[in-house]
Image 1 (cartoon, one colour):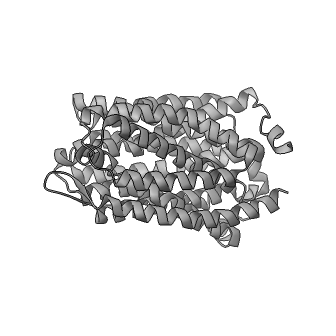
Image 2 (cartoon, rainbow, N blue to C red; image 1 turned 30 degrees about the vertical axis):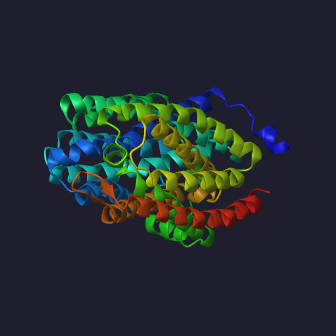
Length: 410
C-alpha cells in the first residue's frame, strides 16, 4: 500500500523541466544511433558496401562509446554534472555534423567513431542526474518518461529522417539532428542548475583510483555483466530490421515511416504506463512480464515471411511493449545499486558495457546474417534464438539484483 502511495508522489516544477530536458537529450542521442538502421536500405547501395561493412559502421559508434565511457569513468564524479553534460553534448554535435558531411564509407566510419566517443557518455550522465535528483520511488516513472524519447525518435525523427533522405540523400538526417540538438544545448546552458552535491562525497584523489574502486565492488560487477547482456539482444536485431522488413516481409520502403509512426505512438503511451506499474507493483515483476512478451514476439518476428502491413505493425507494437517492459524496470533497479559517491563512475562503466555489448552484437549479427541474391536477409531466425536465450539468462540475473536492491532499500 505504501509503495503504491509513494508512486503517486508529484513532481516539482523543476523536476518536470529536468525530465523534459533529459528526455529531449535522449531523443537526439537515440535518434543519432537509430537513424542508421532505416537508412541501411539506402546507405548500403549508395556507398556500395556489404552487410558486414554496414554492421561495422553501426558497431563503430558503440565500440568507441564503450572506450570513451571507460576512459571518463574515473572523472565522472569529479565535476559538476551540468558542465560534464555540456562538454560531451557539444562533442556529440560536432561528430554528427561530420557524419552529415562524410562522402565515403571510410569517412563515415571515422565520423561515427567521433560521435560515439562523445555521445556514448551522455546516457550515463543523464542517468546519474536522474538518480541524483529523483528518489527511488519516483524513478520508474522518470525512466518511463525518458524512454518516450525512444518512441519519439520513431514517431518524429525516423519518418522525418527517411523523408529527408529520400529528397536530398542519406546525409541530410544527420544535419537535421545537429540543428535539433542545438535547442537542447541552449536549454542546458541557460536553465539546468549545477549538480554538485556528489563532489562533497569524493575520497579518491586520482581518477584511476576512483575507477578501480568502482569496478572492484562485487555487486557492481554482477550488475555490469547483467547490463551487457541486457543490451546485447537489441543491437543484434536492430541494424538489419529495416532491410529485413523491406526484403523479407515485402513492405515497400515508402511505407517504413508508417510502421515507425504507429509503433512510436504506441510506445509513447506504453512508456509512462510501464513506469507507473514498475513503481506501484514491483520492478522485477514488470521485468519478467516484459521478458516473456519479448521472447515470444522476437521469435515470431524473426520467422516472418511476406506479411501484410497491418500485421507487421501489430507485431512490432507488441514487441515494443515487451522491450519497454524490460528496459524501464531494469534501468530503475540498476540506478539503486551504486552509492552516491560512485554513481557517475558506475553509470559510465555501465554505459560503456552497454555500448561494447551493442558493438559486439552488431558484429555478431553481421556475421550471422547474409544478404541473398534477391536482397533478402538470410538466417535472421538464428538471431531470434540467440536473443531469446540471452533474455532467459537476464531474468535469472535480475532476480538476484532485485533481491539485493530490496535489502539495500529496506
